[in-house]
Length: 247
Image (cartoon, rainbow, N blue to C red):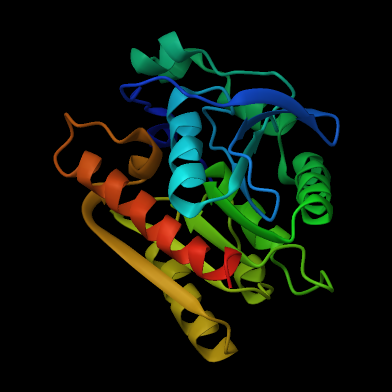
């Protein structure tokens, strides 16, 4: 249930995002693409909606999955200081206060609201979340929502995820799981396998050996295997979402 400092170690990729800013359910949102029929909701990690990496990923999803991609600001404009993150000065970051202001109970209604707005606007909808966003896609895809809000979900190295979240999923789910992860633990991984394999719900599990939590957004080429893992994670997510966005 904790969030580790490794969630916050970011690395800015090369290139500039090509999307634009709109409003979605009264929140600022980065938008990439123009497909009216298929959409992807990206729920960002602790680095937030403005971190270049997540916007570059959105651009890739838009082009490669042929969808309009939305990255809302679920932290109400609050941004953790990139300079402290880059210098790894974890003691100078009020992570406990940040998480109290952005708890599951506070943010879940906003996240569900954005998903419902996109479901009304587009015929097909996928959701993908990393780290902080991992628990949220399970809530969007929960079987309590009838009819379903989304057609499929992807979670990359999720944090704050519970066994109850896993038990409650009601749509096809993909897990992107680095080998080294103190947050998405071996116990949670085993529960995921046992629960979803018995559920009859389509389930895809991608294991990333030798890399750590946060690698799929961070993509630091200076860390052995991490850039390759980021690219593979992007490719696997695109392949998964295309199956359900363009049936």
